[in-house]
Length: 158
Image 1 (cartoon, rainbow, N blue to C red):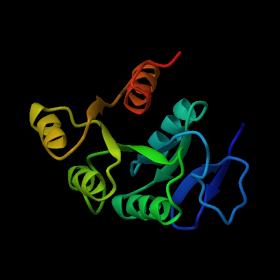
Image 2 (cartoon, rainbow, N blue to C red; image 1 turned 90 degrees about the vertical axis):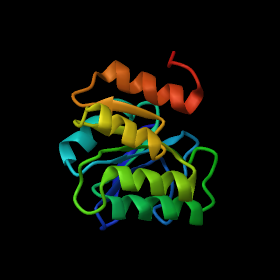
Image 3 (cartoon, rainbow, N blue to C red; image 1 turned 180 degrees about the vertical axis):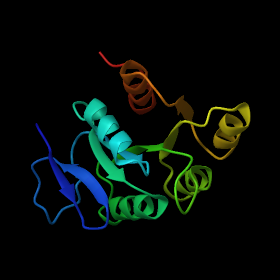
Image 4 (cartoon, rainbow, N blue to C red; image 1 turned 30 degrees about the horizontal axis):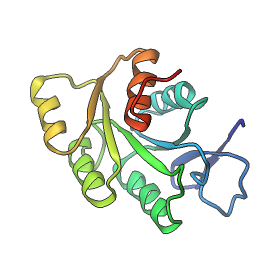
């Protein structure tokens, strides 16, 4: 089912999958992936790549990402709720490593870093703070889909 972009006026975009606007955008039977990046082009590209398999939601910074996650729990996180966060390291406000630690601790959601930072120190800091994987920009479409699918389903996509 094709989704329609929604925006809650707070800079948080998502795909609504045939549900009333009064319900959260992640109330779909497909697993939701929250894309957190301050670059709108990156968010849009990742949403386009993943949108045929997953419900995608977007947030431009850590504060907005936490609001989306909080809403998912207020509404009971349905079976297809937010199950993975793709998170940039370098963002205004709260940095991605700090946000990763908070997301994993507070919500138990898997976090995959999606960032241009690729030093050993960066990767180790992300893993130490709860990230389950690390994808370096620029990334290939196939790598992104394969890693997200593996973390959500335990296998590669068909």
